[in-house]
Length: 126
Image (cartoon, rainbow, N blue to C red; front, side, top):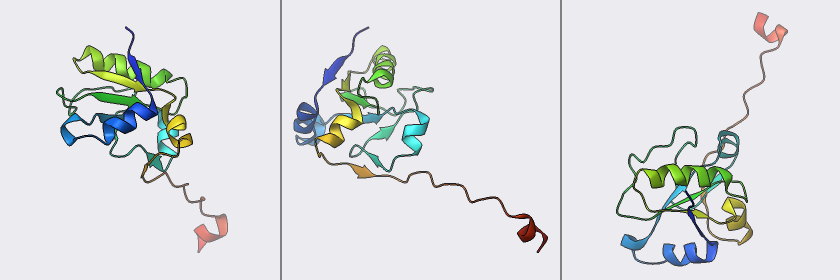
């Protein structure tokens, strides 16, 4: 099943429109790119690509899925699954990389912090 693609320019126009016509943005990045990034598209909701569910996504609004791959491989797979659940879905052409390269707005999210180093042998004895 082929899924439509939307350019960053067309998505920007839709996001600037009326609330009722704005698409829901779905971040479908793989675990590592998701966890090690501090940005996402404005208002995007997270859908883990290995556990895709349409639960909580409104059927009456368009859905735009994106990932970190400029070839939209993961986003395309997630979009097909969401379309199979009855949603109107498209994929952001060029993914997050193209959006950021266009100097378009993003939201900040917490990135995973590095784990603390293990205690040293001398600190453990203290």
